[in-house]
Image 1 (cartoon, protein in one colour):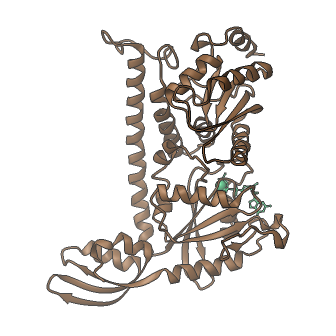
Image 2 (cartoon, protein in one colour; image 1 turned 135 degrees about the vertical axis):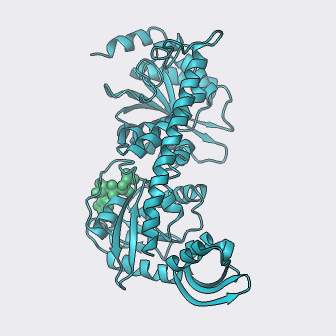
Image 3 (cartoon, helix red, strand yellow; image 1 turned 180 degrees about the horizontal axis):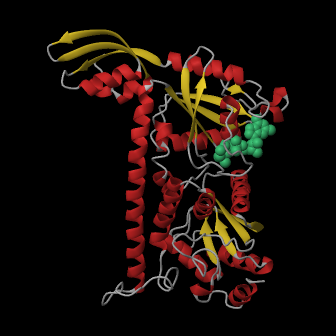
Length: 450
Ligand SMILES: Nc1nc2c(ncn2[C@@H]2O[C@H](COP(=O)(O)OP(=O)(O)OP(=O)(O)O)[C@@H](O)[C@H]2O)c(=O)[nH]1
Ligand SMILES: [Mg+2]
């Protein structure tokens, strides 16, 4: 076994030097390296904390989800440690006694890595690794790892790498990480430490990725302008990861988008045309799934992909009706929607996978207006299409706008976005009455007068 050497070396030296760790930022790290080593299946101990006001069942459910994330990342859960605490310990996140317990458990099961369900500060991570003698990472690192594994487009790869580097930058430390690869001729100035060299290299890479993503976005907005000209409504499928968003897109539009029983199978948006029963044509887009505690670095890096959510006329919010806690998933998705500024986009709640439930056990709860479907069997999709048409029609309102004569492009934008009912020439510009959907009204709000 290629790894046995690392393992025995590390185990004989718990609490020893950081560079004996493997996984994470250790021996195989690189700027695009994984946080979890996939050369073999790492053994992982999970740690969850129930903070004041939280409930223990919730922590357990979160750890079940973390175990699923770990599995998707290619590693195995071999143990679990939980604690109730009033507040996180600034130095080690959990209490000192609990850290000793984790060390004991980790030794017993020969764990490679300890994964915390909550985000660790760089200092907490450093202290924990020192005591535990093994890599300590958090949920964020695991999710970043899965995204890195699943990214296939140029844009997706750049977005994930950007998120990873922003996560790594404050966690770089002396004698760890990229030192072997860094420090080519001329990179080391007088008085500059290896750590500073590493930081600067990562900063440069971050700037390069940001520029690359701006270019991709510019190209895309040229494409989407030509789309807007066709005046079709934009409907975007959102929801928790693995809810069946891609399968629904395939069902409604006969496409062959990748569907997998894995988390974060979709990272790139896919758009297809769809005709509603009344003949309205819409553009339907499937996009990346959300999860609880979605790393903010990812939300930031994926902002340009998530424009299709923010700019949509309507969201289909797909919920796994057979999942462990539909209400918690709905809340987590809505939280991310608010974070990206899409909290006000009209939403149609769609309970999927109803084929897995008996008719009377559908967990609608307070969401009586939700539509029940099965993307697998096609059940309920007629009702869904009719509801989409209704929603799009009802969200259109008649507004009055005043557009200065010099702003021909605004006039054109109004004409593209909806139906102009009346036009009058006033002293200071065109006074228009137009029927527009809510998204267009907010986009053109500068010119709306009533
Ligand atoms: N039984 C059943 N399974 C479904 C249904 N819809 C989707 N699935 C399954 O659920 C899993 C996830 O489906 P996807 O369409 O990939 O889910 P997604 O929401 O796109 O997931 P991500 O892209 O990973 O966020 C796959 O195994 C699908 O076959 C359904 O209506 N019934
Ligand atoms: Mg998908």
